[in-house]
Length: 115
Image (cartoon, rainbow, N blue to C red; front, side):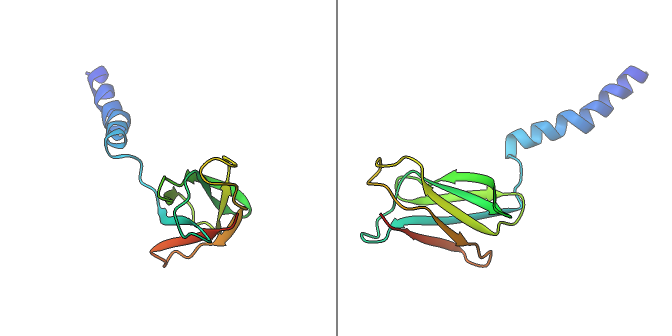
C-alpha cells in the first residue's frame, strides 16, 4: 500500500508538472518584441544578437529574423537591450553595437543600427 501511495505522490509532484511544462512551455515573466532596421535604408537586419542586460550582465539572448524582427523573453526585468552584429559582413554588412534602455510600457521597439 505504501508503494502505491509513494508512486501517486511522485506522479503528482514530479511527473505531471514536467509533462505540463513540456506541452505548454515554461512561462516567462517578461518579453519584448521589436525590429532591428538599417539606419539608412530602414530595412530589417537579419542575424543581430539581442541580449537582455541586467546590471551589465547578459541574462537572455535572442536573434533577429530575416525581416529584422525579434522576440526575447526573460525572467527578470532588464535594464537595457544590447544589440550586436555577431555575424560580421554576412547579412548586409557590419553594424556597430548599440545598447538601448528598455521600456516595459512600449509595445514594440524599433532600433536603428549604423554601418
